[in-house]
Length: 346
Image 1 (spheres, rainbow, N blue to C red):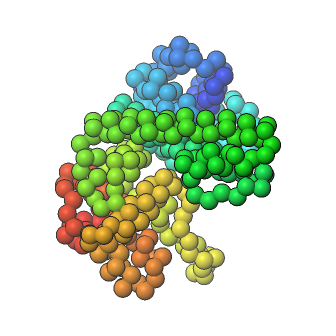
Image 2 (image 1 turned 120 degrees about the vertical axis):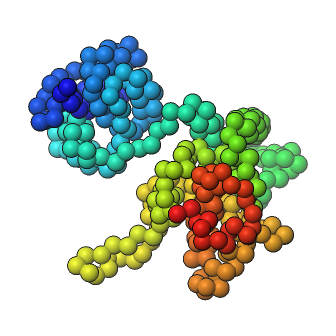
Image 3 (image 1 turned 180 degrees about the vertical axis):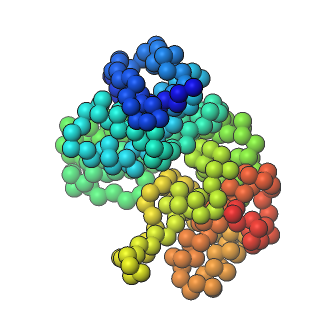
């Protein structure tokens, strides 16, 4: 059977598809309205094709529609496809043709997508919780900015709670006070929404036995554990180095002709949410009054490196490695395991 490679440039309105054979000869090209029916029609016509699409907000849905009816559906990282993104001439059909050629050559960076519906749902809930938290934080800044325009300088969260009426009474301009009052009503709604979103995440986490074990790690609560599981998806995806890179915790070194270029720095490519998970867990573990393995590991690393920043980063990497290894090996947390080299998640 002849192997077919399809490049699909997907959009919310239209999808452009180009299909080539193993020699790069074009077999088919079409543009159709984005709908489940049209996607299925394409899949039935080229059921043996390997389809390559770029990561976007509808990539997961397109993948789920096509996957049962074609040879395979691969989602790739658009940031790596400079040939597509930076081409001189650019349109949907041309982009689809380039994706088909990248597909044929195997020259793409695949983006992980899970088929586990519970995991997909957990990821959506975690994202909803984080977006609600960001909206609330942004609104708080906006309210304080409105106060500043009236010459009222606030500190802390008192203006959203017990000090709300006092702060409002200081606003002389009636119309400005009405705007702040409306923002405060929205603030109260978002506070309730965040609480409800957290409950949804915790309820969904009950479907994942591993989350119940991860919360036993010092500094790791139910939200951090859910974020980790939602981001990593499969503990077998990464070795230790790959997990550090994906978490934006790997050191990047650049050189040319044996000479270093620039300074060493942490890589920015990856999932910064995992970096935030490790940083938050680190800070909480160190804030614990009782001694724990994470705190001990940090102190040993600080003694060895003599640098607080390096010791913190080493501990952040260790926390993620522990979480991955506990998930991968179905093990329970103990402080003794933190110091074992075998528990680095390699």
